[in-house]
Image 1 (tube, rainbow, N blue to C red):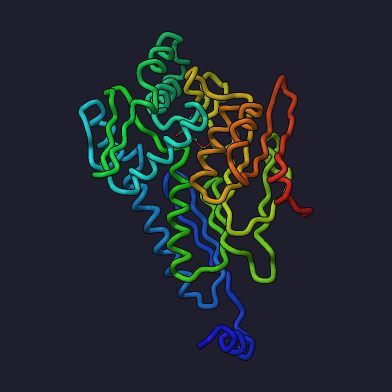
Image 2 (image 1 turned 180 degrees about the vertical axis):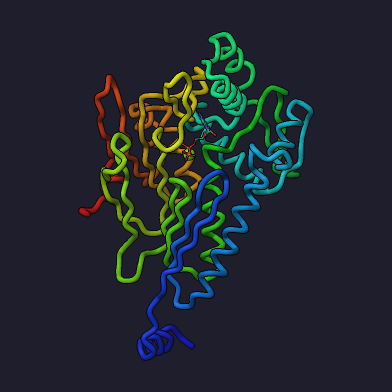
Length: 330
Ligand code: ADP
Ligand code: MG
């Protein structure tokens, strides 16, 4: 049957697309699928397959699971090459791309610093300057990761280094899930994974999916609305996930140069072609701040960015031209 016949058939039978919504808890947060399908069962099956893929990636890339591939790779740090699954290799490669692009501000070897801050939180005491300095100089450094594409091998060249995919993994998982959804014939839907979003096509009769970007200072307010179609949106905000020590709130994004949590960028929203890049960039921009980010973004095509910065309790909002191109009135 050609497309016109199908169309006439649909009009004749008055087939309306149905919205199927499902949410699951995975990777420490909620992944939410909203898909339009003419056949509800098709949507349900596609969601189930996409969810399985995200769980599979979580089992591989999680830092919290004792039996994940990541835990194994980290435990072998300093002992030579290790063979990793293709997805693991690909994600490490993309992480290193962003490390190079940002001069190491995004660093997939941030693991030991996260451990240090996790311990500090448990003990409710700030880490000492000496410990921080030693961790930064000895246990952080993407340049000490070597990739061997021929055999899909990776080498962490120091026993102290530890990989963490927290700044990019959810985005990568969304991209893999979306690939599955599209291969199952999904043409309209949105996936929201704790702040990482991918919009497939548009809702029926619309040009794109309407996404509201929350005000990090007053989260019940929406700062702006964007309309997106076949594109990813990532928001890194210190209001979504943070930890407290001595009653003070700290961001879970760490500056690998100092070892300290970032504190002057309450929220960053990035619009990019895929969710992996959007995720890595929103984390990186949170560390780089506005000026350095504008410089780095010059080398990237069509990436939309909105940055909320804070200085002495004063907030400013920066939006690049590409971001403004997506904005719509409510
Ligand atoms: P989320 O979307 O989970 O709020 P982000 O995408 O902003 O978070 O990434 C935050 C996570 O990234 C942290 O929890 C940590 O695992 C990791 N991370 C923190 N600092 C860095 C950094 N400088 N470079 C790379 N990853 C980081
Ligand atoms: Mg991120």
